[in-house]
Length: 184
Image 1 (tube, one colour):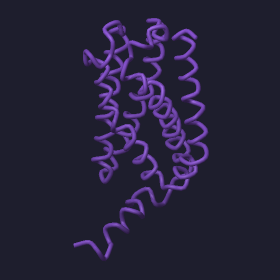
Image 2 (cartoon, helix red, strand yellow; image 1 turned 60 degrees about the vertical axis):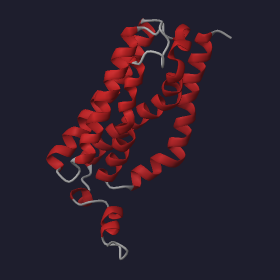
Image 3 (tube, helix red, strand yellow; image 1 turned 180 degrees about the vertical axis):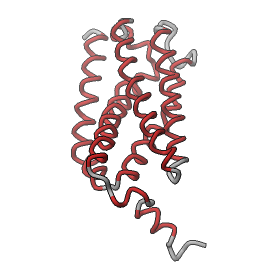
Image 4 (cartoon, helix red, strand yellow; image 1 turned 90 degrees about the vertical axis):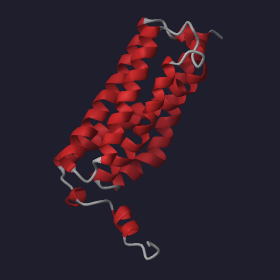
């Protein structure tokens, strides 16, 4: 089997596996949370995207990995990760939190879409071996990231139509944790 067929098969199956998992376990939980808690959970996942800078470290990726793919992927992931962390740090300042959540998802989704475009334009599938250690990021992590961006956008749009009375207070789990009798 050619590297292109293996790469494309892995990428499609990465989406299939994550969609099955997301539909069964993650989506029901996100829908049951208040809108702030749901967006915090999604931002927490995306906060690890700082790791995308690994695409520009020589020796981690192959020397033939197209620079046009690696650079944009690295800095797009890094920007998304920083925006996600900023959203998490400002959760109590809603006038900052919501714009950062929107920015994180716009930058993150755009990054992934443009990375796919660059991957096609630069003929990445035949060079999939040049991803080296980052191959797992592209096949296993990126599908979940894209699915959660779609979920975040859906939750943002649907929450505008149906405002949640709890959206101005901290999630119950945090409130309960702060009132725990074991807290010193």
